[in-house]
Image (tube, rainbow, N blue to C red; front, side, top):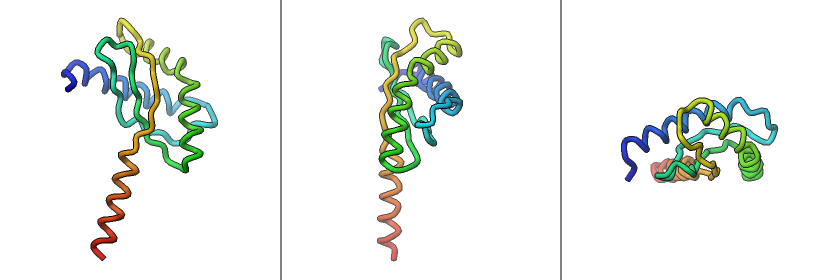
Length: 112
């Protein structure tokens, strides 16, 4: 379980990354929402969970665009936060939104 300090760090990183990703000009990056960030206790690595609107091909292209932009995003974190270390970012697709939509659809079908 994350400590209150780690939860605050994760939330700040999520906000900074959400804003920074929206400002990227890479055409591969589609509509992205940063759902959560998990930072390691030593602040050297951070898993960024994102939700991507679109098909599987668009999702893969967006993740490739984010991976290639990780240096720009890390420098943005360094500029906007006062952290001793800037974590190395890895991007992962968050399937919880997709699973929630599937469960909602199943429940709607059950009601009929």
